[in-house]
Image 1 (cartoon, helix red, strand yellow):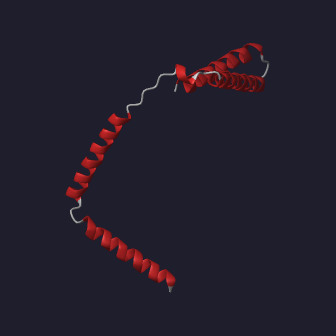
Image 2 (cartoon, rainbow, N blue to C red):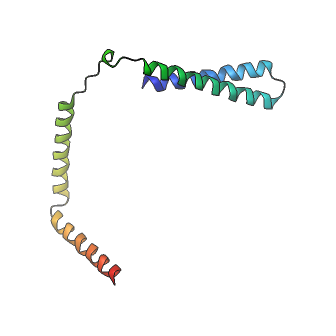
Length: 114
């Protein structure tokens, strides 16, 4: 996430630097817009180049990421069980609804085959 923040920050800085430089140096409003766009694109390109080199030379073993998979699996399993209970309370005859849906699908397929 920090990479996106750096790229966004450099791009915004480039916009404002370009805007200030264009207002100081330009003679027409069109030149202000064009110079601002060029500065913003230049800073954006520089940020992408810098971040690409940073990512390329980043050592994977220097980044310590611990993902607690077991904790997430347990939490998701409990959420699924809760949802199943709520669904059972809300639709106690779910099998009947499925059979009705299957019958309707069969009728639609039969009408399309005629």
